[in-house]
Length: 553
Ligand code: FBP
Image (tube, rainbow, N blue to C red; front, top):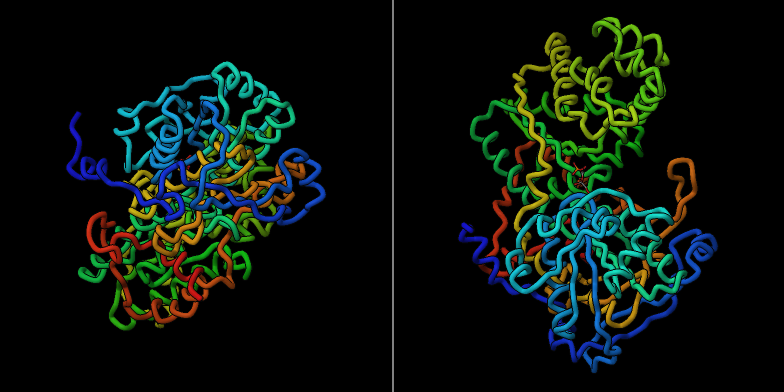
């Protein structure tokens, strides 16, 4: 097989472990802290997780390994969207498992949770693992978005696990997947299966984060990849001086990715969904905010700029969410067929006008025609609007264009406006993991095995102090129930891990807020360049600005 020189070099890279795990398996002992309680709704969560609730935080230390000798057969899955470093979680898990006992077995279940349900797996060996060390992607076993959440599914998983002699299952996923890992752990314990379940925190979105989990893996590499591209676009804009670039970046809901990219590249504009929601901003207000920057820069002779738009933005605009809810209602059930049968867009437009409230129709009516049609024509299998497909970068650039035309007619705007559109998402999810993600992921996997070996279940692999060099990282585990609260989901109260949105009083947003007025008018672009894998640590091992600001004293 042909491989690139970088891939070859990355095979040789030895990920850095936390200092406490570096002396070899024989010298890793465990220290238990106090019992834990969930972040909210303690009584309800305790009642739902009688076997796994309230367990202590654990930390690994240098010292004699006192875990019981036992042959381990571990199953692992990758769940949800790809994130750089997944392969290293698996290689860290494999290395710790084999270093503990060469007869231990690691099975990779294919295609995400479906692999556990269909009992579709591969057994890893050295050659298999070596071909994926320090590489991006989830292609080692694939991933999937099936949710493992019903008792029936758990029973199938338990049966397949027993068939294969599994002692533990490791779920590498985001907040939903780890919520389900906690429920599966509880099921396994309640049914005396003896099968442990451990989670690992993954998602490029950065929204699986709390006082215990400092960052989800993949966020570092994905944001560095997008920031490189945004920096390159800024240089292009500053060279040609003729375009405004509207760049949408992934992040299904939270705006952590957009904020981190803004901190790295200092664009003229970056929208933050959480701020839009807190200030209840309308589409017109957001449009005016961007148009003000374009106008001021244009009047200074700078007919170019860069605006970062988070993927999830429209759901944070109250009037837009209301519109979407009304559209979903309008086309519920058989009404979709009625709508689809209408002969042309004019007939459909009249149907929409008659069906929406006047308030929502007014919002609908100011949308560019392409977006209007997208809202009605591209729908998911349940008939709902596919919000993530809305081209918000085009939505705002077209609305800004219309606003500027009015300002031009009024004589306040004297510049020229030409727009380019980009969407950066898939480009970053499978990049070669940065040194940080390669090290962090390997440590999470290695650590996950130590949690299994010491008999824990319902825990999330936790590596903390990660804004410091790896030597100082702290390895351990936290009961997943500690991160849970009750939330309303699909009409029911459910125990879930709290999703971390951008905190408007947090240090990363405060830094951005303190500088954005200047960035909006001046050209303050910064150019992070490509991820560096080899060279001085201050260039190669740096993690995100978000983490650095959050952890600065
Ligand atoms: P996870 O939350 O599963 O990690 O996935 C996040 C994400 O990458 C989002 O940023 C994006 O909106 C979504 O996945 C895209 O999903 P898909 O891969 O199904 O197109």
